[in-house]
Image 1 (cartoon, rainbow, N blue to C red):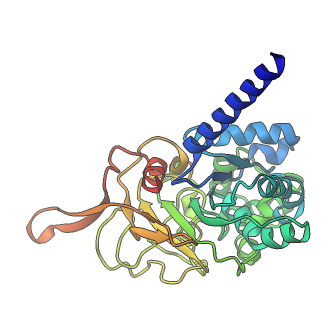
Image 2: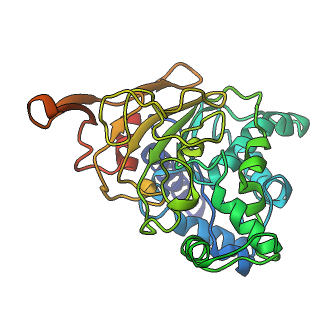
Length: 355
């Protein structure tokens, strides 16, 4: 009887696990989360258990319960150092052994998680093959507020921490708003990798052809305190050159040459025209802030730099849009809007479209 009870319990647990995976998957693909910078960790230097707890809290607003795996990492370490060896690598092994990505999986990243993911994509196949394991079949990444192109704020923070940068009240206000405190030489950690030149040199031309699908905002949670230090349109933490996936760091006002962040259909002379390999901007919004992109709240209507993009296996992510005229007579303009974006958060729009 005991054995039968044990078998029934195992079967029930297996059933629950299958149900959870079916719920968590995006379009049938398991979801792997890679979070962004957590500034408090720069000084607190959390242990592995605390890193895991922080990772769960990071995604709780929307994506946590829609994912199968999280890769949590500590901000006080470096991407190519202990982040890769102590946090990314064990998860890669676990996913390979479990066959998590055997039929394809999707990585969802936010902020600096974009940079961690790029380094992972460039190395995972070789690392796993050398360990006698099967490489992961990653069909696409969904990158929200991607910091793969670095942030000028990180350059300023590292300069101040090393004593080589002058700090006035505006910079002090900006860094305090972003990081919570002014960094010192012992609290820079991953900020070193997040400097613009450093970020762009880290796995800058990966062999991986996995499509990096981008979701970008141009709002701010800091009342504009940080924007003065970021070129072009920004989301309060990263400039458009980074979030859009531009091939160069410059001042851009859109991820598109024909659609503005607010959806206006007009030539964008300062729109991005050249992108990093396999980077494809999809949704944009003038009102979404850096953190707001992964929350479950509507911050503004959403437009599309591109309405669709393909996965590595020829599946695709598509959004329904419509064009409307706003204004009167000769003063009117046409705007492109993603359907239902007036009452659906950016993350929910992506999740629903993927399913």
